[in-house]
Length: 342
Image (tube, rainbow, N blue to C red; front, side, top):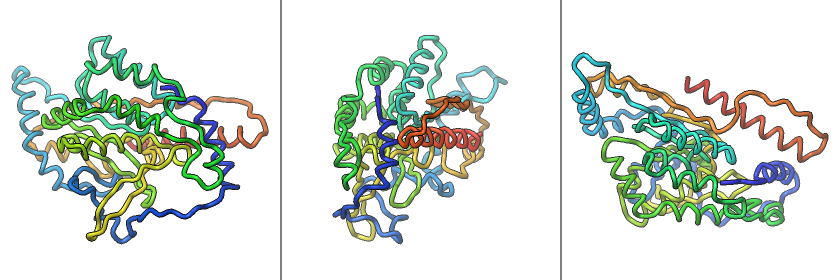
């Protein structure tokens, strides 16, 4: 998946903001006082605020599956063995660099020691990788194809003039939406639902731009609904997580609050988090206490981008300076998220 000149569009956006014209919106946004209770109709329990306090009620609902899963693993091992192992994977954003994460996972499978992950999380480009990583090595060929077989024109259509003069974005993401539809069909949804039933979790992060807050979506629980609404929402969440604000149009999610229908505006999860495992104050020890068993956890983080500074003498032009500044900001935020998770 080659995003091409999307970073150049990002730089152009920074400049366009200085000259852009505003247009009115006919969207009915959720009132601030109702934002905490807004829910997707028929799918009220499929998401949480990423910066909220942990709800033990959510953990209680998952206890039966978690207990059964870890009891089975403990029985499978020899007596006196180490605690059962749980592998967790977090995939960061990275646009073009998402090909790194895809290639790493495929190579890991070929090496023969890639584990099954009990939790997979994804942001932005990482969100597009996450469902395939979650379903395992059987989907490696699809994952590799997604990130190597398509050019920029199969991901977005430039719409620069409209974007500058009051439009929603500098590019149209309809090609990306169609690409997601190609891979995420009803059969794919059923496979995700099956794994969720086993106590495995696939989480994707978006940013609620109205609220300026991260939202984590339980994609397995969405998949378990199994109908057309669930399939559409699953696709929309993936698209939203990869929709760089200003470059791609936001994704509108229909919700209900106070008996009224509204539309939330969701954009790239990387706007608020570059990578994540859980909500803000969650402790894995809470699970161990609840199931009455110690679990050994291995946390794997794939950062789709470089961490070290890269020196480059910059030309004194507006677009070059804007692009370099945005790249630096994104890299610094990603490093901060790694430190927070550690």
